[in-house]
Amino acid sequence: MPKEKPILVTGKSYYAWRFKEHTKTKHDMLQCYLEKWFIILGKYHPVNYFDCFGGCGAYTSDGIVFEPGSPILAAQAWLNKGNKANELRMICIEKKLGNLDNLKKVFADYLPNLKTPYFIQDDFDHSVNAILDDIDKSDMVLAPSFFFVDPFGFTLKYSTIKRIMSVEKSEVFLNFMYDAVQRHLTNPIVENCMDELFGCEQWRDIGECSPDKKEQAIIGLYRDQLKEAAQFVMPFRVCYPDRNRTIYYLIHLTNRLEGATIMKSCVAETNNGVLSYLGKQKDQSTFFETSSYKEEDLRTLLIELLSLRAMTFNEIVAQLIDSTPYLEKDIRTVLKLLRNEGLVSKTAVSSKRDSAIIDDDILTLIG
Ligand SMILES: C[S@@+](CC[C@H](N)C(=O)[O-])C[C@H]1O[C@@H](n2cnc3c(N)ncnc32)[C@H](O)[C@@H]1O
Image (cartoon, rainbow, N blue to C red; front, side):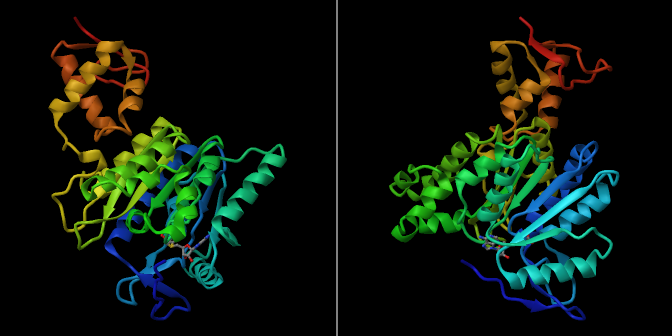
């Protein structure tokens, strides 16, 4: 698995890793989403943030400018937007003692007033299952929890991701290391590892696929598996900054429609409206962009959907959010156009204004 070279940060007692453009994208998406997630779920409850592969806490491009690692970013998101009347419980899991010690130093230096996170030096899979076992044995309920699962390689167990998602109000943001997976797909030494990653044996059939079908086959199979664990599963493609090739997919799993719509908007917001990070290659298509955004496609899709039956706005968004390239706001815009053209009518349930279309408003195809 790749190793990061430590770079000493001028004037600090800790080291950092080289900051890469795709890491910035990953961090921007995470921070954008967490700021919104903390506002919504932290309003009435304490919340948990699990950084399951915590890292060393710091990045730098030049050894001088500091860029925070994911646990620090999450803490900042809480400080920026969280409801301080409730508590953030931050749990940082990291297998390597050196990285964990470094992370502690970064926290102490950068966020000295933050309530100290729980630092666990352990394997992610072991420690998360131990925490969930303890909760199962007690009559406690886990507070709403966000799990950031960001390994270097692909030693991840599908069963553990599924278990996390079986806990009410849990969400996962997961880094699926596509490039490493595709390279090792026919390596007999990692067969067990692949079985655990996919939670099935069908990945073996993909070895036969032509190279142009391989990527869709791998990410498609993994997504299908994850759909057994969560209602909304959205993979976002991340390319190498300088090559026309996928490095990984960031996959968001949630059982809340609002979570899915917000994450998708965050990804678009952090990537100039595109639902993936394409590096210097801006002309590629992605899982969500097999057809680029076209109002016409969405019109056809909405008319087809509503020809089956009248639906609430939320039902329509739930149908389309993780299987099409459209954002919630795109769906609303086209429904409004259809309404203005007299093709669709609205029965107001949630909206107060005539022009609005929200939540439980019912949309019916006319004629
Ligand atoms: C990609 S880095 C995490 C980066 C961090 N999420 C960030 O964005 O700042 C992966 C980290 O996981 C740690 N690690 C590797 N195997 C692990 C395991 N089985 N359990 C927990 N941590 C592990 C590595 O030492 C490394 O620090």
